Length: 91
View 1: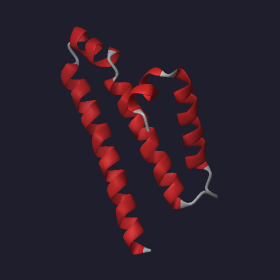
View 2 (view 1 turned 90 degrees about the horizontal axis):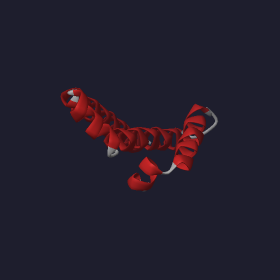
View 3 (view 1 turned 45 degrees about the vertical axis):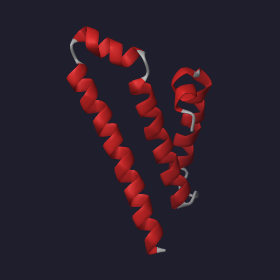
């Protein structure tokens, strides 16, 4: 996934909306659904770390809260990947 393109390209958001729809489709495999979740979390991180968000956080004095939000998304991505690895080894 191209993070820079995702953060700046409006059609990318419709692709993420499609990934959300795929995640909600219970007929998809668990692997496909986990991949969708990682893609959506990664897109969220790209949106959070795009040039405008950090600058706005500095201007408004909310930079520590912005750092916390990015760290939480990073943790969610890591936890999702770890779960996917654990599930893969069970099969």
